[in-house]
Amino acid sequence: MRYVDEFRDPELGRVLATEILAAVEPGRHYKFMEVCGGHTHSIYKYGVDDLLPANVELVHGPGCPVCVIPMGRVDDGIALARRPEVIFTCFGDMMRVPGSEGSLLDAKAEGADIRMVYSPLDALRIAKSNPDREVVFFAIGFETTAPSTALTLKRARAEGVKNFSCMCSHVTIVPPLRALLDSPDLRLDGFVGPGHVSTVVGARPFEFIPADYGKPIVVAGFEPLDILQAIRMILAQLAEGRCEVENQYARVVPYEGNPRALEVMAEVFELRPHFEWRGLGFISQSGLKLAEAYADLDAELRFEVPGVRVADPKACQCGEVLKGVIKPWECKVFGTACTPERPIGTCMVSSEGACAAYYNFGRFAREREVV
Amino acid sequence: MCLAIPGQLLEIVDEENRLAKVDVAGVRRTINIGLLDEDGVGVGPGDWVLIHVGFAMSKVDEEEAIATRRQLERMGQDYEAELEELKASVIE
Ligand code: SF4
Image 1 (spheres, chains in turn purple, red):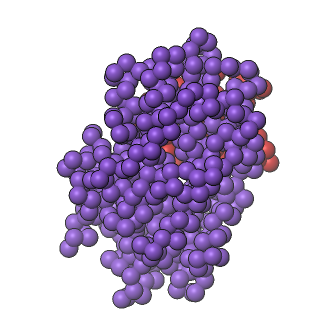
Image 2 (cartoon, chains in turn brown, red):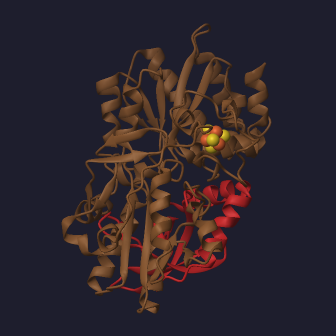
Image 3 (spheres, helix red, strand yellow):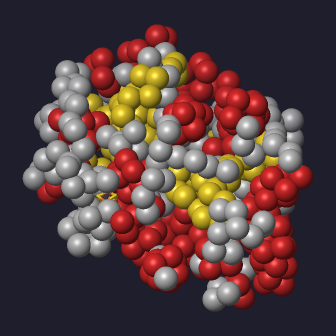
C-alpha cells in the first residue's frame, strides 16, 4: 500500500482494499476497463493496482482524446498549418502527436505559424487581433471539450469574426465502447465509467452497457479512492447478480448531464457518418463535424484539406493497447524506440495515455504482473 | 488539457459573453461560465467550479474543490503544466 497515505482519507483506502479482497471470489478472474485516461493516470500514479487482489485486472480504455487521433488527421492539420495565410491553433497536448512526416511541433520548427492555446476562446482572440490572417482551431476531445468549442463558434458567429474557422475532430464516447463490446478480442466483466465526459452527457447514455451487453458500469471520479470505490461497487453488483449503471461521482456528475452543454452541442455539431480512430479503425457515427448552419466556420470546407488516410506504423500497437488486448509494456517498441520524448504511437504522447502512464509510473505494477 | 481544475469565482466581468474572473490557486484569469447558465442553480461570485479549457464545467462545493486541488497538487508536473497554460490564457 505504498501511496495510501496520500489519499484524501487513507483509512477509507485501507477499508476499501479489504472490502474488495472480501468481495472477490477466489479462482475467478475479473477484467474491468477504466474508460478514461484520467483514471489510467491516477491508477499508476497512486499504485491503485497494488491495492487490488491479483485476480482483479484493470485494462485501459480509449478515453484519452489525444491518443485516438489518427495519423492522417495530424497530416491534414499540418497541411493547413503550412499555408502562409494560416495561424494554426491547438491544445499543447496535440503538438507532439506524430503524423506520417513529423508532428505539429516539427512543422512549427520548420516555420509554420502554430500556436498552443489553453482554450478555444484564446484561438478566437488571436483571430480578432490578426484580422489579416486566417486562424484555424484544431478542435479535439470528447463531449467534455466539445461544448466549449460549440460556445466559441457561437460567439464567433455572433460577433461576425470572418477569419476564424474550426477543424473539428471531436469524438463521442458511446460508439467506441460499443465497438469494444462487440469485439471478440475482449472479455470484460465491467466498466469504470468516465467522470468528466459524464458531467456533460450524464450517466444515462451508458444504460446500453447493462441493457444490451449485461455488464455493470460505475461512473467514477479521479481520486484513487473514487476508483477503489467504483471497483467495489462493480464487484458488489456482480456478487449480487445485479447489472446496472451506478454513479459513484454523483457529487459532480448529474445523472442527466448538463442540459445547456448538450443543447449547444446539438445546435453546432452533427454526427459524421464515420470517423477514423487511431488503432480502432472507422467507427460509424463516432465523430462530430460542424452542422449545416455553421458550415462557413468549417476549416475543412473553407480550405483544401487533403483528407489523408495513413495506416498506423507497423511497429505501433496502440490499437491493441486502446482495446486493452495488450498491456503497454508488451508493445515491442515500448520504452525503446517509443518514449514520451520521441513517441511512435499516440498513447505515449499525453500523460493520460496508457503507455505514457506506464512509462512514468508503472514500473512497480509491471513487476507485480510479471511475477 | 484533460484536467478539470477547481477555481473560485470572483466577479462577472462580461454579462453578455458570460465571462467571469476566477482564482485558481492564486492565478487570476477570465473564463466562460455560459455552460452552467441553465443548470437550475447558476453560478455567482464565491462559488467554486471545475474548469476545463477555459470553461466552467460544473459547480462543486468548497470542500470538494479544496480536496480536488490537493489531489491535483500531488500530481506535480501535469498540474503545474496546466497552470502554466492557464497563465498564458487571455480570454476577453
Ligand atoms: S509503446 Fe508506443 S507504439 Fe507501442 S502501443 Fe505504446 S504508444 Fe503505441
